[in-house]
Amino acid sequence: MKKFMDENFLLVNNTAVNLYHNYAKEMPIIDYHCHLNPKEIYENKKFKNITEAWLYGDHYKWRVMRSNGIEEKYITGDASDYEKFMAWAKTMPMAIGNPLYHWTHLELQRFFQIYEPLSEKTAPVIWEKANELINGEDFGARNLIKKSNVKVICTTDDPTDSLEYHIKLKEDNQFDTKVLPTFRPDNGVEINKAGFNSWVEKLAQVVGKAINSYDEFLEALELRVRFFNSVGCRVSDHGLSSVTYMEASKKELAEIFARALNGEVVSKDEESKYRTYTILFLGKLYSELGWTMQIHMGALRNNNTKMFKRLGADIGFDSVNDEQIAYPLSRLLDSLEAENSLPKVILYNLNPKDNYVLGTMLGNFQGSEVPGKIQFGSAWWFLDNKQGMIDQMTALANLGLLSRFVGMLTDSRSFLSYPRHEYFRRILCNLIGEWVENGEIPEDVELLGDIVQNICYNNAKEYLDI
Image (tube, rainbow, N blue to C red; front, side, top):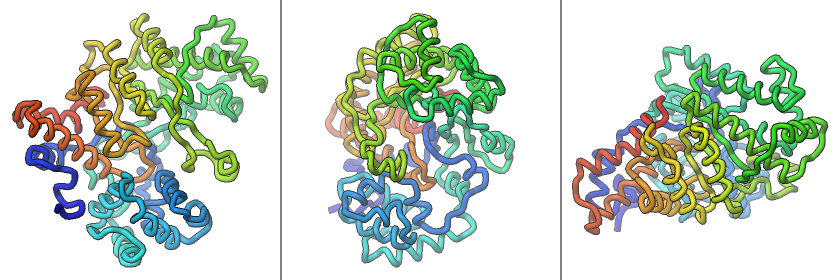
């Protein structure tokens, strides 16, 4: 029997061990999609204790704590940090089979040199040992990034953001990691979303021009895209509540926008028409600037109305949606391709039923600009677990080129989340190792090692042109 999460964790054959330890392990990280706070990076945020570093804002952990019957007081409520840590420790043994069980222990090992499993019994000692390290001088946000060998971080930023801290970081010669913004225009794309009008007003203030028409709105968006580009942005991100495609005349779109600005709720079809044109407009800009466009699909958000009213969004009450995406996604990509304006695109699905939709969609729109121009993004959110990653990579290998995959990202708000890249790399090496051991591919370790290193780092570096 193997030891619990030892140096060969998840590596079940000699080829996998060789590929991980000699090729994957020391590769740098490009975290091209995350939710880290650039202000906290610039200020080298320090943490009071492990609860602040681990549990503040982590809706992944909050969900499983609720499933374990933990009172909300010990999750998002006014319990002390120690009480919240103990509630997480109580949940941990119940979480076997959940990726959080592995992530938690990888983080304890890599950042705190703690190798015993977390439980109510071990929690008091782990609390003391972890906090002793956290209170040291080398446990700030920047040090954690450096320790994790992260070369590039792409945060997630609203078009109205000043990018003040990105600019400061760009000018800071004491920090080697690039911290770049990502253009996330969801607040301007979802016309029926609460707060749309106030967001448009904020956008107008930021660009210094009134927005009274759809043309003026598009002009303001373009100004922000170009500003983001000047600060180093090379990636956009769209979290689509629905994947839709409906064409409309510019006159009709102007009328839809005007009614929305007047406080009216537009129809579902009108919303689709507005979303379609706005995304296509932005896609053409991304193509012109050489950006990569990320599209995240398949989330059904804020399902629990009572808790949404009490605590707001992004608190752990989201789930997988089951809408059909193939046709509208095809039309979006094809419309851009028809005008020679299709940017590099990374497609992410949240519903595993769509693995083969995305896996085959890639081949429809590839180009010679860069290998793997259209990417099947890494297993995301509810799928970034062992089986979800295996399924995503296997589908990509079956239907396209796993060797051109741009690899893992954290999608996290935590500076302790970088062992997720290790988790992914171990799974990747084991998958390829199994193919070798089964005689499905040659035992050409030099070739396979190159492929592993490309997926871990080199492909993303070339693809994103950062």
